Length: 280
Image 1: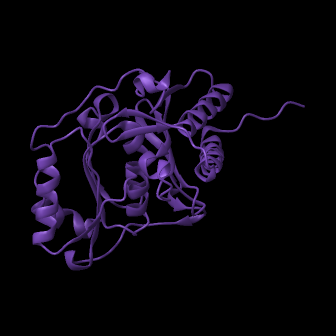
Image 2 (image 1 turned 90 degrees about the horizontal axis):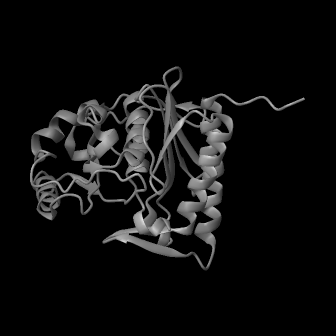
């Protein structure tokens, strides 16, 4: 008797955890091979191994679904289902054996998110959300933080070469001036999941690519976070600013930070093969 094809929701969970286990094996390997995609942007053999596995499994189960991945690119379906795949978010951390990284998957229907999974293989924690169950950590419902003052808040920050260094300095200056704690942890999808779980009060980044951003933003929003309209800003094609914050923090944070669209953003259109020469 043939095995029953899993639902997309079941498959997403299984694949996020399987991908995390593969990534963790590479993380502990003594001879991990790395390459450069550009200044401050690296790729490892683990990124490719994980993305190839994810693509093969998705297409075996649902051959008509579209896939956009960080390393091998792709294009969203105009209607139907699209998967966003970041095989390892936080690759610089991963390559340096710093244990803050994750696997991120998001499922879109007609270009709107309906489910997402962010798996931290180091802590064996699966953050996920769908439109039926809300946001969860494993089997437990989660909600964003309820701090009512900025004094106790901890804000996650992300930056890259796709925007002016001056904007980063302005963010740091604004938060420091108001005595607000901040962290730059190096894996945006995992930071967004930690906003959903109340571990961070907010996460802000002037530009993120869709495979990094959409899943974590969906989980955070389903946990009650205030978020910017990433997809409405054409984020699926070009990337966009990311903002997710607890309701108690959002207004206060927006009041003290410079606009994420300020400066001269160095947005780049996502290539069909985003890893460029490193993918060959």
